[in-house]
Image (cartoon, rainbow, N blue to C red; front, side, top):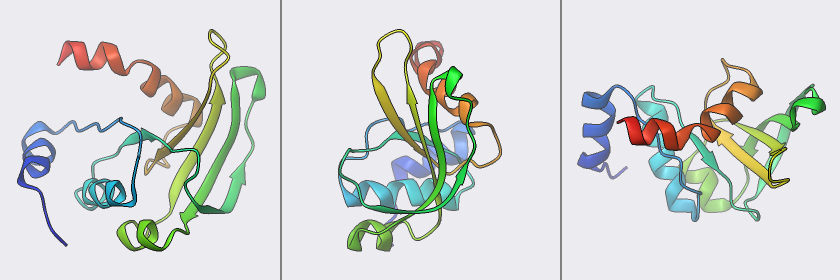
Length: 129
């Protein structure tokens, strides 16, 4: 596995690492897996045509805008090779804009609503840093 020193600096010295761009290609999953291996968590948006298999679905409160909270495994040949672990897929609708978002994360510890709020607050966090 090729390791990018810039990513290591962000993980090791930053203690807070966020990569919140859309996953655009299978190779992006390699970077996400690197974060996962260093015990950093991420929240990213998924490209609409990424391939996955649903393993498990959790109940969601649809009145909050959530549509699904699933444990998935990637099924694309390269994406599975680059990220062989399970991921969490969360879908929601933004009440203000009616836009639908699909998030991927390796964080199974916090609620789906917290994941969506983290993404929504990302600009404030990035401006602060």
